Length: 324
Image (cartoon, rainbow, N blue to C red):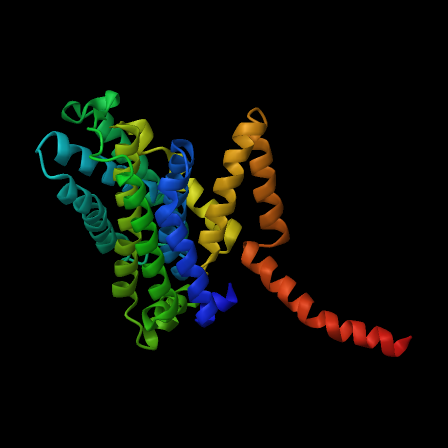
């Protein structure tokens, strides 16, 4: 992964090959595999979006899933109640959560709410919105809303892939830009960062809005994929908890950590459901526990350890030969 970061031609060639393979995959695989990849793209995009806010600023959110639900319901309401075009409804499914994040950020970010309180506030927000939507009869209440079928079978796959790639591009910009450096300064010491000229309030507000877009778009895609949205599906707390777990597993505060964590855990979770359905949760939880305890930096930390070991190995071999 370090080679990808360095921008070598081979790295870009590999990345381009992977993207091209994913583009043509729908024509090469069956419906089950397409559905699995669609959900995997969602996991990657959601982990990347969570990491943009939490991994770089330290403002941990356990309610980012609320933007997933807002996006799903925005799309459903616009399409079924107001007959808005599918394209416009999809775009607004990403814009609306960003505007909600703007409104929340104007309160939460300006008062410098403590990180623990921010986590609780975002978690509570998910449940508040879920309760309001459940009681709104014009939104279908607990019964939810039914969505029309997509115009062609591969549309949702294409949209999920495009959303993931755009989120990766946004995450790469955050990771490598001066804006991202300012966010890392906030993570280290917010008051010191502001004293050195970092616009802390503005930076937190922008990244909070940015982190809300991908969950909203994926909420629209998944709701459309399942042909319905209801409060229990759209505002499921497991969505909010999966994002930090996947990010921590891969490596928080890094560009490729969320991608690796979401890919490994998404693939592993699918295999565990198939082969160990009764022990799925236990094995999954133990794996996360072992990783967090042994390598708090996730798979990225393990990769760095392995590279250091491989670099030292020739020297160690030469030393042992001289001693012998």
